[in-house]
Amino acid sequence: MVVNFARTSASTEILKQVFQNINAQSCPRSFNFHIHTVHSDGRLQPNTLMEQAIAIGLQGLAITDHHSIGGYQVAKAWLEDWKWNNPGASIPHLWSGVEINANLLDVEVHILAYSFQPEHHSMKPYLQRKATTGAEYQANNVIAAIHEAGGLAVLAHPARYRRSHLDLIPAAAERGIDGVETFYAYNNPNPWRPSSLESEQIQHLANEYGLYNTCGTDTHGLNILQRL
Image 1: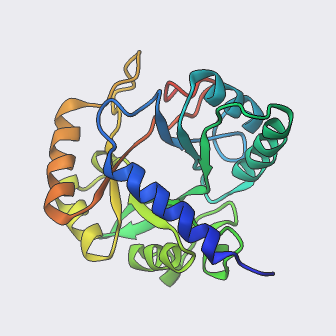
Image 2: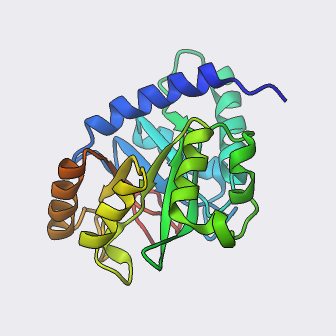
């Protein structure tokens, strides 16, 4: 299989530019980089998700099912068909995405991978619908695999783990992480809005360690504007 690294590289460069400008108002109506479908533990069908994204007017998004790109693949095919039938229409940019369990400081964390080449051999262990074990479970190896496939690695919801984000973010930065999910709604408010205290602390650390800021609703329900 031929891997189109040029296309992946261009898409990743676009994503870097987007991440450089993400702020507390970016999600959920301009961008959304954390959404689940029925291909992991979400309730949305990929086509319904994309219909919502277009109706909202999202500029870009990523489907981040756990250890699966099935939802992304279905959504991508649906979007290509929709574009064909709606020439000239404004459509969101859909990046490849997946959420991966990993060990960081002896705590299980989730690492979001974006804009990687799905067919790349380095990603195969992480796309088997289950968490890896052994060396492949270590955060540094997860991050390295994402980079090898041309993608970006982001620490998901840093303030949701058994160890403080004040410890985890520096450790992730040391292992080569590209960004952190800075703007996240920890208490599932309605309407969705990022938690102010955690977001402020995480953004400060992101600036200190030269990391990208990202945002996402972490949708598991039927509406991409909410988490549940």
